[in-house]
Each structure stands twice: as C-alpha cells, then as structure tokens.
Length: 202
Image (cartoon, rainbow, N blue to C red; front, side, top):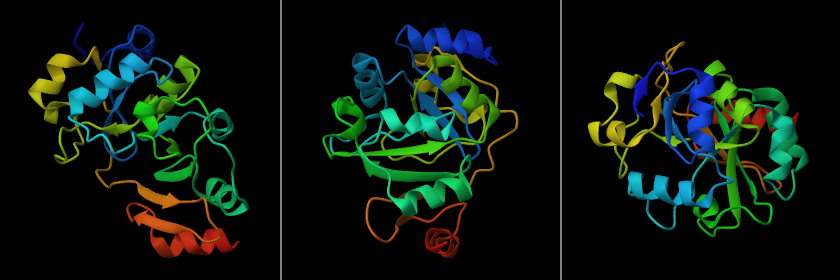
C-alpha cells in the first residue's frame, strides 16, 4: 500500500503491521513506525540511512504517555512540559529500560515530544503508544513541509502518506537536554533558548 491522504485508521493499521507512515507534524513531515516492533525500527533506520550512533526521536499524544519511555523527569523538564507541550519542543530524557536499541542508539537517552498537530497526535493516540518522529529525509537531507516534497525513494517504501492539514510551518522543533540541573538547548528552533530558560526557572 502506498496511499496519499489516507485515513488515520488505515495509517494506524499500517503501523501495527510494521509499516512506515509519512505524516505531518506542527514543524515538518516525519516518518512513523510503531516502536514496539523492533524490526520496524530497524527497517526505518535502513530506509533513512541513519547513522548507528544517532537515536530516533519519538512523539506521543499526551504528556502522560512519556512515563513508559523515560526513567525519570526532572522538575525543570516538568516545567517545560507544562509551558510548551503540546508543541514544537523535543526533550531529551534518560531512557527507560527496554526501549529498542534502534530508538536509543545505545545512548541511554530518549528524545520525546508531545505534538500539537491533530494528525500526529491522532496517529499516536490510535496506536496507543509512541511513534517515531524522525524527519522525512535520508542521510541528513533537508526536512519537508508537504507530501509532494517527499523523496520518491521514500515514497515508494512507505505504507501510507498522510495529508498535511494543517500544513507544517517548516521551522524545526527546539531540542533541549532536560536531564540536568539546567537546560541545554541542543537545537534552537520554533521555541527560543531565552523562552526555554525562562520557563525552566519558573
């Protein structure tokens, strides 16, 4: 199956079957697999030509869903979650035991965000767990905002391409290491570093 504009139900079934789904987030298009299927995670890594040392970011529909993925949540991380979730903020946590090595890349960490995009949230909610939120590109290529920009090689390999309504804004998510006593802004994106530090301080 390789469909555009597929229903959420069809996309969820594709994920449950081990397939890859291209879907919109508030920031850019992303590729989803069910992280409970290690073979799907490894297939996604091969499809993206993902370097062995690079983890895969995850996306959840509800902040409470992170507690099966992370080992602990610092008070500062909780403040950032209250301030910016759902939204374009990925937080790096210590990973819970048992996550697929293909997700963590054996770093001991996991990067998660709670998305505000209705399609992204519906996919994670329908699946009943986290989905991957890695970009719709290969080997460090640029991110994309529309399904029409999807690389033909990727398009031929995914099970379903979801319509991007509303269209992603095209600005990368902000990534913050939230494990320590102060936030480390790994990548500044839609949310500024200044806003991160103010929210962390309360």
